[in-house]
Structure formats: structure tokens, C-alpha cells
Length: 278
Ligand SMILES: [Fe+2]
Image (cartoon, rainbow, N blue to C red):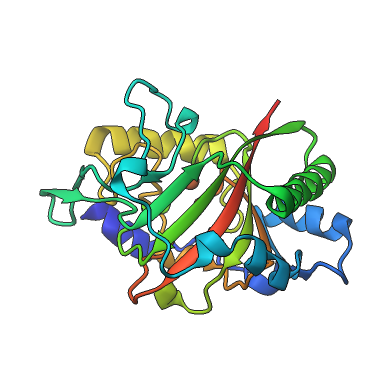
């Protein structure tokens, strides 16, 4: 209850964090200004990074409204302890997570229910070319933005089918880590459940992360089921990305980030590439 009140009272860093500060057009922007914005704000939106007509054609299977996966094709290896080492596709939200609701009672939540997560899917021809272009461009941005060196990790394709209960806003870690999202089917309203992040929230990250972990460890997360949940961040502090096919989003995952709940019937699709510290 106290944290719910604090979330209303502590909207930090509301200054100078509108999307105009970190939104760029690919053709008319320099990589230096994109890198500077990523370093300063923690996220960037690069419009028209890739040809939308080409993406629609080559990722047509994933974008089709009739796309479904038979149950016997779902792969989840329970012997693999690290989620990131799974091979998909995996249906998220099939197992309930318990959390403490606003009245202090335990409640079950099916996080990311409606989402299909393809782990390192095999990419064919022009799909691989699109993926390679994200890796190459993001590596160049990271080389300018950070003193640390990164290397690319696994890729995913996320299909969100009207995800009404996304994971709450959170940090993945407190060391720099980056994700690049190539939009295959974007969103243009809050009701469709855009991805977003909290600008500047990577600052003092070690301190913020430590305090949050201790609070969440003692009291439990009242928003989800993890110590890394941003239980002192209001959704009003999260800036949503409204994007279209071909746009590229790059965010630091040590910034608070996540998806807004989708409150209408809507499908969004992204190709995601991870980057880890070497
Ligand atoms: Fe995350």
C-alpha cells in the first residue's frame, strides 16, 4: 500500500524526457547523435530503419493473423535452468506467478499470457539480412555510446497476442545490457500495449537496484514476482514508443522498461537482438 502511494508521489525525472529528445529518422540523423541520446536517456527510437514493405514480405508467416502454433510444436526444456538458453517457441504465462496485491493479499498472475517467444529462431535469407543489419548498426552505436565493449547474444521473435497482463515494469540487471527491437508490427495507441522505458533510470542504477532488491526481498513485489520489479516507479514515468514496421528501438535494460497492458484485441510483433557486456 505504501509503495502504491509512493509511486504516485515520486514521479522522478519528468523533465526533458519527452520522446522528441530520443526519436530520430534513420536517413537524416547521424549515428553520433543517436549514440549520445542512448547514453543520456537510456533509449532511442529510430524511424524508418528498414524497408517496411520488405519486412512485411519476408516475415509474413509471423505477421499473419491466422498464425498459430500447434501444442505439440511448443518446446520448453525443463532441464534447461536458464530461460535464455531455451529453444522455442515458448508460450509465456502458462504458469501462474504469485504476487502481493494492493491490499497485501497474495494473488495469482499469468504474466505475458498471450505472448509467443521464439528463441533464436532459424532465419532464412532476407530475414537473416534484416537481423544482421540490426546487429551491425547497434554495435556501431554501442561503440560510440559506451566505454565498455558489447557482443551480440541470442535473438528472439516476440509475438504479442493481446497481452493484457505483461510483466510489470522492471530492470533486467544493474550492469549495462542492451536490446535492439526491429518492429515488424507496431502500435499507435496506449491501448495496443506499446513497449516503453523510463528515461534516465540507469543513473545511480547500482543504488536504485540495490534498494529495490532489498525492499522487494523483504516485502515481496506488489506488481509481479521478481526482485528486479520497479516497484517504486509509476507507469506515468514510462515513455511509450509508438512505432511502425521498420522502426528500430534500442534500450538499455538496466533502465526500467516493459510493455503497457494491451486493452484491445491487437497483435504486435518484434525481432529482438540482445547485447551483453564482454
Ligand atoms: Fe526486461
